[in-house]
Length: 388
Image (cartoon, rainbow, N blue to C red; front, side, top):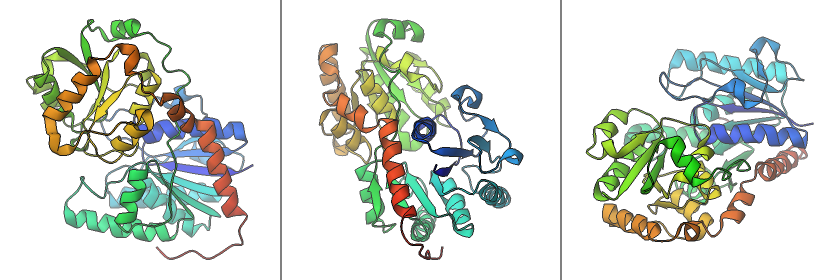
């Protein structure tokens, strides 16, 4: 049985956590024993209801070689905080001594930093990391981004396995000089319970009418460009909007001239109950990893409209073979594409490659592929790792 310590920065309502949950359950069916170590969400950030996930919640003092479930590393958080980061590193060191995993697999930036360094200190046989996107462009000032690039390059040298959830993400990381051995692996998304609710029931749940309904799913932060979504609604008076998400841009979004034509739903962990009622999912992001919301929308028969940017282009190509809107086409291009989709009968909007996309993202398939890669490293003669 492969013992895996999977480390995530925080259990916020987003793609990485959704995938970690799916992999925990799929891995258990394969005979893997997974301990999922989670940091803390920021104040006001939407978090998963951990007791509702069907995964045992454990105390750090309970952990031993037979443990499987969720354990919290409270000091670990997204923002840099020297004292808490040291506390989090010590907590991970302690978990590694107690659990003695064969594999340490980190997800998201802070967990990747603290987790992989701890894995090196403890000489964990396999150190792996998944990039669910990256923050090396479009997030921070140039000097800070350069520092993050140096850190990621050094962490890559101590990583046995590196994965990216889209070809765009892997290509960018390669171009940025992070590493040249990053493998492309689709996100693990459990869509079995999606698409069962009808459009009418979903609209009743959202308390919206029968007219054109455009959806936005994501954190209300600059990289997700929610204000572009509001601009789109302003340019399309024939449509209403529904927003699933929260974040620091929410006050500006609600104050937008089109804000009074939006149903503000907050963050939801059960999007499958709502997505069938949407006509088009709009993804105006500056970049994505591989957007889980788009996979879930496809499972519900809903198309996505977005720009030709990393992550979004991968989703569109996988879902229906389409090409994103050129960024220089701006708002008029986005409006034209959304109207083109709305003009189609609902049954004609269903992404044409939906079934192949859902199969590629099936958690059991992804867990089996990861297990094969773990075992491939474990079977090799032990070698020294580079320094970080």
